[in-house]
Image 1: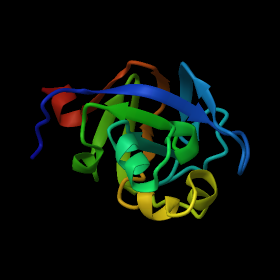
Image 2 (image 1 turned 90 degrees about the vertical axis):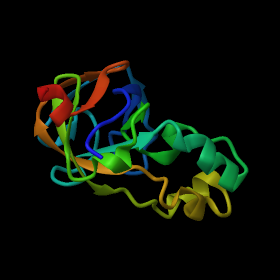
Image 3 (image 1 turned 180 degrees about the horizontal axis):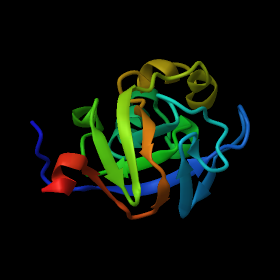
Length: 152
């Protein structure tokens, strides 16, 4: 269970400067112990939020809408690797090391953003929270690798 077919990839990065603010897409971002520079997130277990690109069409199918990364309010969209399989593990993304701490539950805003049933559509597809182990830079296209595979 510790191996993966291939590395994942960063497809989208976004930050929001204040609560309920619109996410601003970025090509590259600095990551500190408190999370992404310019994001209003909080340090600790929820410093960074991630979601899989592969889950967007699933959520869209469950709520009859178009789903964008901005609508789901997560910081980093990744593809090609199962984030659920990384729970409790460290992952390297660019020069950054994150620790995947647990699932990121949907908020009540999903009903506003995605319409009726939006909250339920996002349940178990809402992404993952992470703490920052090593600060650095993350950019679009960066590989997402479990630390065990980086060390091999």
